[in-house]
Length: 426
Image (tube, helix red, strand yellow):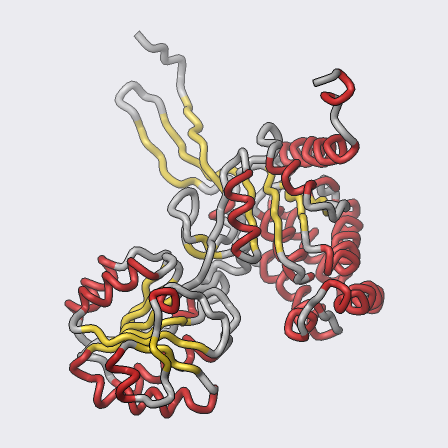
């Protein structure tokens, strides 16, 4: 390879410069107290409301370009901003401001026999590279969560929301300057070239964590190419198991809410497991309750025999995150079979049991290997806001470094501060 070919190209130089600024900002941000971060969040919320018209105008440019990007009507709706949605974004920032600051939190103290005092305290991770889908509200949410937890963030949103995201970030940066927050704490990647993602994923010298949020293809690409740790979830193939000791009306309500309250999200139920002892009583009830939602059932032989409209499920169906009006259904003989089915076909996201049998519930919660296991509650509750964590940057199905909703604490690590009085080691 020639000397010329070894020189960094323009994109590489751009990405490294952004990452270097983020690293520098993260070190300054680690020294900012909670008051500065909270004033920035509250000022940004106020400014977003005040500059609503300009943000809506920028969003209109993205909406006009949406057909050219092949966005569906539903995708375009998620992209759309109006006064109500901007007010919701601002309210989200205000809520993050009201959450406890995890940075500096004392986790534990240990007194050693030699007089040393060890303090384990929570600290920021450093720099987060966040790659996400074309939803402008996520731009503000991610910036708020990262900065409140003391991290600088590099935002790489979808090109479909480029104008909207830029308008939101500009407002937040303007407020950062006003309150004295490091302005490079939040940076939006300008190039829409897919190669930019790969460049940032190679910069482990500056970036401490990558978080992809979007389709499975994006997440697998980031996981494969990243040279730094990644927090991810591939799919949300969530289950509800209705046990023989379930209260059936309650079970029906939980199944309907888990599946139908919002179908296109990662914590919506995609599979229903029914204990064989209650099949004759529960199946007619749940079929009736699901009918208004036009849910297509894909079941095993017993389900298809009892429900003429049901289709025979394949192995692939049991492993699929449908994100729409399709539900796989299987009859199981006991709790252990339900557990085995979930651990085989599930994605480790959210799974629920409906039962009044404490032993069955205990066995299920111990045996199911998921980020959240629900007992007599909808899968839709696996959410940062619902868990009292405030806004979240995503829901992780990993086991390291974070699992479940990733809020402020999940974007921190810890270090030991050792206080001595002249001790030396012999």
